[in-house]
Image (cartoon, rainbow, N blue to C red; front, side):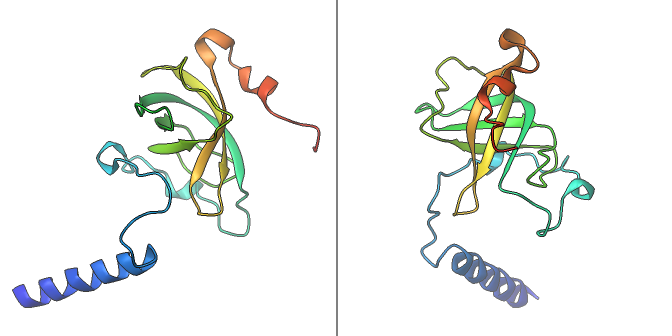
Length: 145
């Protein structure tokens, strides 16, 4: 039984490495998985691949911001448009976004875009306590709609 367990773990590790391109390193920012809480994720709200888009927006509470300001972990509500349920997860930040005015426990509204690498990055963010509930509307471009 011990041999079977080791064999299974080895096979899973090999599959995981091949899914990452075989190098064992991720191409995009590294998230601290210990800070991610997928236990509350509502899979019934997940859209199938045919209906998912590459942009969406939602609200949430900042859990943490990386020291370099290039990542934020946010406990967010469902992100309609990309088919993602509510959860706590880390997001990369695009170069157009400045997190210097934000801190842990800030209530925010934010927009995400899915990159070619499959990760979601924040493209716009605002503090709903200081800037109002609809603060993201001013940052979103609705000209194409």
